[in-house]
Image (cartoon, rainbow, N blue to C red; front, top):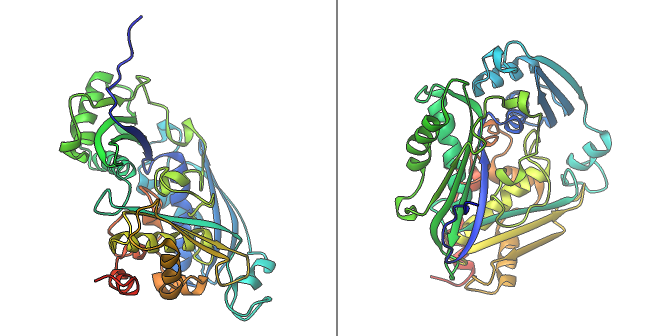
Length: 397
């Protein structure tokens, strides 16, 4: 019996995955956020909770929307699918021929009174739901994201770029990546242990050519050369064939890629999805704020890694709890960091929305290749403009 190919192990392994914009769950996320953006563009106070299901030849849009906006949801759905690249009717799902079913209701008045300033038991705008939200940052990359998810996103982003540019014309929209990093005894990235890519393709392409092209033109340009060695393992379409894919191959749902959307398994997750939700929903806005806080703490060199937990009660403005966990890497007491956070960061829903400017139509860009670590100006939660204030409050020069 032949031995399996494995690389020698010097430290621990950690793996993160990403999916392309054409993955069925991401198709659903992008449709939901495109609808949200259209609503916010006309009415910044829109209340949107939009869920999407995609399957063979069908899109179902459901949820609750209260807005003064008047938008053509069916056209938004078709335009989004076309932008992603599903334009060929022969693959079982395309922008022009899919059926679009829309079943939307208004936001519950019981929820509305809790998130509308001046109504409900508390007069200040409260959280749109109870729940726990997490933000994370570490110093493994310039973006202060974990290395494994950063590289996994880079690969799926590259897959989409070479497909849309026709550099690899036999690629189809669906795909996944996975990157395994080997860490040394001090928890520093030592090398890239394994890379996995599965990509949908046209039927005529041979596996040998596909693997060679994907490694040379997609994977290697995304990897730091110093972390790749002769022992790095590459698995490309390891079943040998990936022709049937997208919504025909797998039903897609909004909010089913929450670890891909966040930190690739690093840190914790409260369970709430992001896409299709307006910023009054703290599942989204408080997660963005938690990332903003954690990133500034690491950028200020108060810690080498940081996880921030926020929790809320529906209808109540102030967070129920704030917790900082630096895994022992902080230069001052974590209790002092928590106190400073409460002093200088606005943590109420209204304060978060104003601070991060979240009532704008900025959300389609978050719905593929992750909500964190990007450099676009609209990703306000990625700013590190609180570094000096944090260091001053911490008594550091």
